[in-house]
Structure formats: C-alpha cells, structure tokens
Length: 569
Image (tube, rainbow, N blue to C red; front, side, top):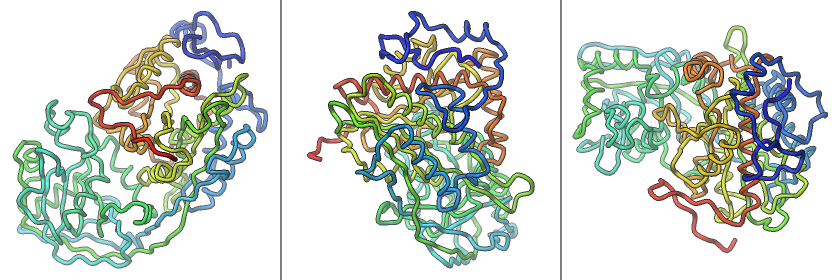
C-alpha cells in the first residue's frame, strides 16, 4: 500500500527531512483518502528488511511480532518477558542505538509479586442490619494485599462509606471519623465528575484524586484495614471485566525501598451491583448515598454492617527490565529527549476457554513498534541530532506505571537536562483522522510543537474527548510530569476522515468494550495504517525539532507541574 504521506512529510518550517525531498504542500487527509478510500491490506516487511524511514510495512511487521503468541502476552516476570526484552534489545542494537543505561541495555526494576491463593474459595462476608451477603472473587469483587501480607483475616470489621475517599484542600471525605482498623468503601473518580460542577476539582476532567492508586494510599495513611472501590463503567472509563482481568493474576509493586508510600493490607473493588446489595444488607440505599457524596459538605457514613474475609497470598521478590537505547547527541549529549512506550501486558490466563493470551496488540505493541520506527528514522538522518535521543521500553505500566517511575527515579540523564518526554501508548489504528488529540492539552509548551506538526499534515489539535477517563494519569508520561519534565502524549483523534466523529467514537467504544485488556486485543491483517503512520511522523518531527534546539520547553502558567531545579549531575 502507498502511504498517504511520506515518512518525512513535515514542512520545512518544522524540520528538514533530508532523506528525500519533502513536498511543498502536504496533501490533506481528505485529499489522500479520496484518492484511496479502500486501502489494500499492508504486507508486513520480511524480518530483517526494515527501511530507514517510518513505513507502514515495517511498523506492521514489528507490531505483528510483538503481539504474537510467541511473546505469551508480555507479562513481567515470565518467559514472555524474556522473549520480549531480548527482542527489543536486539532491535535497538540492529537499528544502531547504543546501550542507554550507563553502558547497559537493561535497567533492572525490583518488584514484589503478590499472588492470591485459591481465589475461588475466598468469600467476602457482610453481616448487616437487614441480612447477610457473600461476595465471590471475580463476578462480585476482587481482592489482594498491597503490603505483602501472607495471611490476612478480617473479622467483623466496621464498614465506612467515605464518598470518593478524597482528602484535599476544601474537601475531606474522611472528616470527623476515625477509620483506623475499619473497612472503607469509596466511589470511583472524584467529586468534580460526580457533581458535574466545572468549579469543583476540574469538573469532568479526572484529577489525581480520582486515581485508584491515590485512594488506596490515602486510606492507608488514615490507618484503614481495607478499602474497596465501587466500579462503574462511566466513572472508571472501562468495564468491570478490565478490573477482573487486571486483578486475576499476580499483583506487582515496587519494594518499599523504592516506593515508600503507605500500603493497605487489604485492597480491592466491588462491582456496582455487588455494592448495591452490600448497602442493602446494611439497610442503606447505595444510590442515595452515592448522590450525597457529590455534594459539598458530605460527611462519611458508618454503615450498620461489618465485613469479614480471610485469604492467603504468596509473596515473591523478583525483578523486571526496562530496555533503554540512546542515540548520543552530536553537540549536547548530556541533554536528552526521552521517548517511552511500555512493553508489558497481562500475559496469559489458562483458566479461560479458547484464547488464553492477552496479546496486547494495540496496548501496547503499537507503542513499542512506534519507538522502533522513530529510532530508525533518527539513526538514519543525514545530520545526527545535537541532543541525545533516548528510547525507553519500560515495564510494569499495567501494574501502576512502575517501570517509568523507576526510570525517572534512576534516570541515566539528569532530570534538569531532560528536555521532554514523548510517550506512545495504545495508538489507535482506525485510518486517518482530521484531528490530533493531545492528552493534557494546555499544560506545557509542547502543545505548540504538536500544533505546528499537525498543521503541516492538514490536521488540527484538540483536547481529550473523554477527560473523565483520566488518560493523563493512566500512562507513563505522568511520572516525568511529576518530576517536572514536560511530556507529550498524543495520537489521532476521533474525527476520522472517513465517517467523522461518529465513526471514530464507535471504533473507540468498540475497542474499550471488546478488546481493551482482553484476549481480543489481537493483530489484525486488515488494519488501515494511514493514521498511525501520520502520528509517528508527527512524533518524530516534534522530537527532531527538540533535539536540534538549545531551548527547553516550559510548563505553562497555571500548570500542575514545574521544571526541576538545576543540579550539578
């Protein structure tokens, strides 16, 4: 298939391609599709025959390889990890990168693996004023220990409904109540989403207070024995099956020496149906209490019920690997642009019938294949970049963005010399789009870099169409942002050239419902790569411009983050 835009289609106002003459005017997506409305399937490049340019055939070959059954779902700590990291290292080396972690290809990330034993036998028992209820693991709830406890037994633990589980300026769901040793139940997301109030938190845009990691940490700080989050699809941004699948295997965490945040002995989720039954057994109306939690002045409620559960875990200390390659800068090698993509996914589940492997083609074989394509383009530039360009395939994203967290804490480059992070995660493959979605639009000056690159492609930049899903806090770039490094997380938007926003939203909803974190996330030989190649062209162009500048993009006034202080490193 002929791609609608050649690999270096950015106008010379952004970067000079140098690999072949750029057209004076980039064809618009609409013009391109009109000429080729039904593209033929892309034939993946034979192994070892990759081009020096960003090409759909090369991208498809890498994507197909990474999402094949050979990689067994790319779960950290398994044979699938060893196959995956070896392949990435070999590709980085073949492309011409150098080892990026102080002379090493790998950065060992310590991790603690906690595996619930015999989950089918675990029952959460609730005794209330209106009766007793049992909740099984899987259909009704999920559970595990976050602090490495081997044997956990809760007996008649009082249950507190604490709204959204938030303690923030001007909002405290734990006001006037002691939850030490008790079980806390909270809602997903944050009060701004539930209240639909643009002046509360950030309105529909999820804040860090809405993240499940924050809720568990806050409950641990308060001394709670357990915390359960009530799942609902609109507030979470994904269906209950995603929670089930994510908690069905070993739970992975950094050791306390790397992540000293407080940890609960017992953590989990309830489905909304299960929570409704639980509250009813206490003589309480879940829907009414949920509505009350959206209002300013909400006070936590102690239910007329207790919770009991006993379970056992196996805890192992092990490790996983970030794979890091670098193209050293020709003039300012100590300054770096860091591309990231997580390689890990959910592995395989032998209890499933039929397909048992979570191949993770979109999530996130697309990202790893993408940074390989961009690395290939950088290495084969006629003029090498003035700054170093780092390519980090990081682990443990699915377990809470832990590989990137470790990378930032042990970065081979000083953070004050890290120019920007460009993160690639779950690129949509739906054909060309009229818009580019920038997650977290308005935070940093990287917006302008993306806008210039998009304009040269005939596209416009738009904000996240589903801010309540909190994508800014759900991928690895947020670790760089917290450390003060501006980060760009962008991809094709929903306004497709063929079918518009209706078709784009339909495709996105279908992926979330049927493939996201499910065995159905498989490679499709009929995919239309025109849009995803535009995205990679754009992200390469942004990185190339940054790599040849001497300035550092900054956070915008009012942003949630700020640049790190200068160091002597």
